[in-house]
Each structure stands twice: as structure tokens, then as C-alpha cells.
Length: 630
Image (cartoon, rainbow, N blue to C red):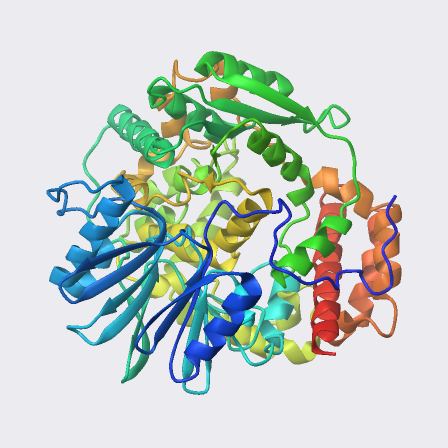
């Protein structure tokens, strides 16, 4: 077993990712009197090309940006951009990509800010609009390409990744204490904030507008509520599957050899079936991770059935237990951030095999649980409208309750999703002030941080939107919820580490989101099955053993085992040192309590493993910041 050194051994520098190359161009830029010098300095270090346009300076890898011009608009785009809706009449240029960027430049020239909503794909764009005297920086609707920004005096800087943004700033910002504490406690961040003070993450559906009047963030897309179509259950199933397959087709459209990360679950089986429908003569590859030493996790049989049913060539990679924490140190060195999950080590060998097999884009079923699942706060809407019997019926349709749920379980569902969902957010805040706030946070949180954590708590923030409660909560989960977990940033960094384009049709397709929001939500309630509409619609397209399986497989125990053993003991010893920087952020008693991981089982052990992993990761990150500042 690899022993962890006292200094966490992550002091190397350099932008090269784990795979040794980057499939995906990385763009950085700045605006202001000092931007040119800062961007040129960073570009020299990163070996990027530089472009200047007045006060705007950009740098990126050679040949990775497509430029389009129309009227007074000049547009730089990196990533995958579709032709904007309503501008399909332009003649094609030498490449479809160039044609799409040229059409987007024309859209901005004619529509200004309104052009953003017409663009789809996974992209990052920078626009210089001379007629309107603004610069716009934006990513796609759902933030598949991440964007971080910061101010430094009169200058404004932006980059896809924080590690690159740091090269533009005169000094590395201090940690954002309350964001760090929330990350350790809940593995989430306040919306838009990062672990660094003054570095902001641009949320989904928003763009930055820069002018001599200042910098402001403007929303360009967010779903608008419309009454769901009066569809039957069967019609909803057909609509759901058609929308899912269309999203898969769009994700794989320009790939020569698509691959799929295949599990034994319903969502990845849906992607596999969608790939088969959209293959167009291509021969997609499926890659399955098997766990022969973990029979409760191993899905080999289901993976093989799905590959056979959908006609995919399957490559299986057995997992052998490896240390959890050394990859964390590498990750911090590369990205200047702690990882959110210990699971990266599970999947990187699979991605490496896909890359070696000639796959140029990897799809998966990430996000399927949320976008195809039940929205429980429909119960609150029924209560608020006085439809008590309808609320009672829905309370018996929570997946997992069983065909004949006990009245006590229905009452609990009414209280948790009905009553709590129906009361205003202000009431939640009042109740929080009257309760013992300590009960709302884990044992690692220090007393002095509790007021600040309560003030930034966003648990019920979705209630302040428009539309029915079920709709507000679903939109929040599909857009802002993912941002709070930095899911897009984590996935983007993992893809760069693998050197392989990763695409997530159920996470990053705005048209799929809009289609799902037209479905009457009551059809998703089923006391036995989760995602019933997707299951019904996939009849005949995926194996019955997968379609009718309602048990969710989690990989937590695979990483929990080493954390509960020798590797975890080493981490605890490191955290017990008075010099450990994490001790400034957490309670000593809480750290000592993590030692119980070696003597507990089940959910308690998993909870302790998550806390230990995050505390140790943040500690290593803090050491890295200290060594960089020295």
C-alpha cells in the first residue's frame, strides 16, 4: 500500500493533465488595462496562442477556437456548437463547425443578447459586439463547459477552470471559509461561489456582459412554466423515450466511434438503446466496470445482457482494490481543488481503455435519476389547492413504499413533501432560528460557523420562483442543484484527465429538459417503480432484467472499505496533527469521532467515510495552497 507522506506530496506544478494531453481546448481571457499583460504571461506559461481585440485579450491552445464575424460582431467559440435555431439558411462553409459559428455571429449581430437562447451544444463563447459596445462571455444552457471569473482591481478575468484562472491573478485568493466548511459538511457549495474567495462560478443559463460601464451577469435562459399537455400514461412514456433518444443522438452526432460507459442500470441501458437507434452504420463500443470481489455491487450479468440486446461490442474491466488517496493528491496538484468523490480511481482505467480503443467520445447515463424521476412536491401543490384526497393518493405513490403502503408512511410523505413543501420559505427560516441550529449540521462544523451557514442556506430557495411547486423544485434540481455540487466542473476535469471527450445527454441537453417539463407529473408516481414512464417506454428496447429491476447499485462500499482500514487510519493520524490546516475549519471532537469508522457498519460507516474523505482532501488542498504561497 502507498504510504501518504506528511506533506501530502502534491507540490509539483504544471497544466498537463493525467492523460498527458487535452482533447478539449481550454480558453482563458481578460478585460481591462492590465489584462493584456496578464493573459500574455499566462499564455506563455501554458503554451497557448494569444489574440487581442481592444481591451479584450484571449488565449487558448493552437487551432482550438473557431472565429466567426457578422456585421459588428466577432465571435470566438470553443467546443461543440450547433447552428442556432432560425439561422439554418446560411450556406455551409468548409466545415460544419465553422458554419455554425458564422451563423451564431449573425444571430448575435441581429438579436444581441437574445441570440444566446438559440444556441445549443457544449461550448464556451466570447463575443465582441462593437455596435452595442459590449463583450459577452457565456457557456451553453446547462453549463457543460464551465466558466469561472474574478476581478482584480480594474481588470476582469475568466477561464474554464479555476487552475487556469489562478494564472491570471496577481496572487492566489484565500479560501472562502464558509464555502469550505459547507463543502466538508454537505459536499455542496453556495450557488455561484467557489472554494476561493472572490472566484465565482457562472451558473447555468447565464452570461457575463462586459462594457466600460462595468460587468454584469444576465440570464439568457431558464425554463418558463407552461401547463403540461394532457397526455395519457402511454403517451407520456413515448414522449419521454423519444426525447431521451433524441438527446443521445445529438450527443453522439459528430462522433466517429462513440463509446458508452455501461452499467447494469436503466439510464445507461437507455443510452445504449439510443445509440443503437442513432448509430448510422457506426459500431459503438460499450465499456463495463466489473467488481468480482464485491458481489453486492457487481453488475456483470446485467451489463452483458444490455450490450447483447443493443448490439454493442462490450469490453469489461475487472476492478482490483487500489489505494484511494494517492489519486487525490495528483488531482489537487493538477486542478488546485479537492475532488468531490473518491470514485475517480474506479473509472479512470475504463476511460483509458476507451481512449486506447479509438473511442472519440464517451456517453453515459449520468443525471437520469433526476430528469426521469418523480417530483414529490406535487403533493404540496395538491394540498395548497385543497385537493386533500389527491394529495393522500400521491403520498402512497412514492417509489419504494410498496403496493400497499402503511398509513404511517403516507402520513410521513404528506408531512415531508406536502406540508413542508407548501409552507413559505420565510417560515422555514423562522423555524430554523427557533431550533437548535447544531442539529442541522454535522459534528465537524464549528459553532462560530453556524450563523454564516444558516445565512447562506439554499435548501428551500427554489420556493421563491414562479410556477407550481413541483415545477420550481424540478427546475432547481436540474439547473442550480447540479451547480451547487459543482457536478459540471467535476465531470469536465475528469474528462480532461482522461484525455477523452465525455458527453452526458441526460445532464446537458436543454431540449430534453424542456420536453420533460411538459409531462404531467402525476404519471411519475408509482409505489413500486422509480422512473415508471421511462421503464414503460423502453419495453422491448432493453433487457427485461434491467427494465424491471428497481434496486439502485452504489459504489460507496468499494471506497469505504480502504477508508475503514489501514488507509483511513493513516489519514486520521495525519488529521490529528496539531499542524494540520483542516483543524482551523472543523471541530477537534468531530475529527476524533471519525475514528469510529473502523468499528461501525452500514450507513454510519458510509457517512463517516464521506466525512473523512472530504476532510482529508480539503486538508491536502490547504497544504497545497500553503506550499504555493511560500
